[in-house]
Length: 110
Image (cartoon, rainbow, N blue to C red; front, side, top):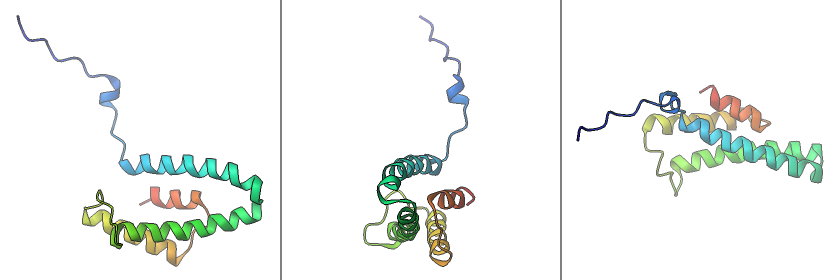
């Protein structure tokens, strides 16, 4: 018997591949939105705003830790990506972001 012809590409296989960062940011958005919906009514707007500001500083610390800390991210081996993570963390420390939406906008622009 003759070999079968390859299947026609499906629309999904022709779609541009998403950058992994986009997926991580979408997961972060989903988490943060649910967290905000859960916590804001419990602690109030003012306390939540302060919590979010502190969380952005924590984000910067976590970014640095995953590149230069004791438990480095195994998937972050490219030096250009590592430097981008360092620069992002330094930017957040130097000019602290006040919200998750500011952080994701900043990360999308890089």
